[in-house]
Length: 172
Length: 231
Image (cartoon, rainbow over all chains, first blue to last red; front, side, top):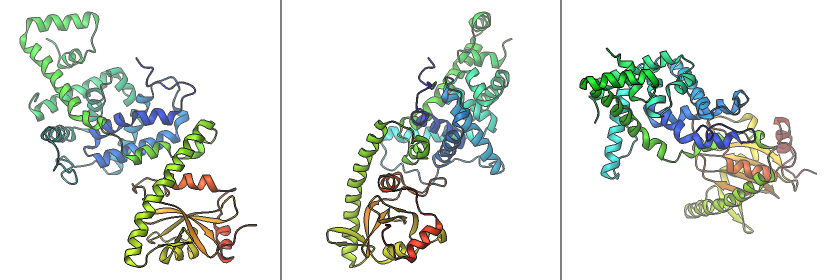
């Protein structure tokens, strides 16, 4: 099941990374809470990944490696900004919803509700939830991408999910 | 008593063997545990669903460009890639025609502007011609309206320069006393991290360049010599 993301010896890493863009953007969005910041983050991660592509071990999962690069970029960036304090609803500005169909509108409101709750979580819990719940990685894969033991991943995930459940009031 | 973490792991399909059996037995005895497992599954599904539209939309061009940036890593590549580039270059030329058409139309209405037509070719005028003739990339002011990028000699010896402004970017080559516009394109959006020139301009440069771009001294010498074609 891993073949489609592991990079063969002769494959072009740029093509493989390009194919991962949708998932990288989604993961970044789950961390950053707004699309412009998320895309800046993806861009930084791409540039870092291409500079360090020789550190990627061919044959291992490229998606996990890219998630890790993105995670590191995010942590550096968050540190540089000095612990982002914003817990408020993101993306009030700029996101045009005017001519959307009702369904798309609902989807946007739902996304906003969910990411507002996500933004209230500590960084480490958000990373765990982003990889497992949003990106669908297994605990082992997520723990590897985050460079933490599976036990640590599990407890961050549990705390984050309890907090989210309280914030979101159960399933919609 | 089953810990929350165990229930969550079970809900996520992370347990197997005896661990899974134990949780399943506990759930069978206690409907409250079953409800917790359901709630965990529902929450996970809700998160996945909420973010799904992000992965469904096409990534913005600047990210696609970022993946394909830095052509030096690809020089060793196959002729297939070169062919693909040739196709892109044709599109670029086509796109430039349209962009230039608009541009010229507007300029003609205003009765002036940065672009004119001479002997069937688009040429730089006004501020653009002035910038191409006078500005040195090595002395560029960050706030200049028109910025010069690379200066280089083309295969036919003519000196060419890339430029960019808020409205357009492109490539101009010296032709007698004028700057002929070989490429004019809408500027790539300027993100915080992007490169100076769009891929279209870089394509056009690599299709024409002979040798290396001029360095600061070469650029100055070429300007002082009136942009005469290299021998």
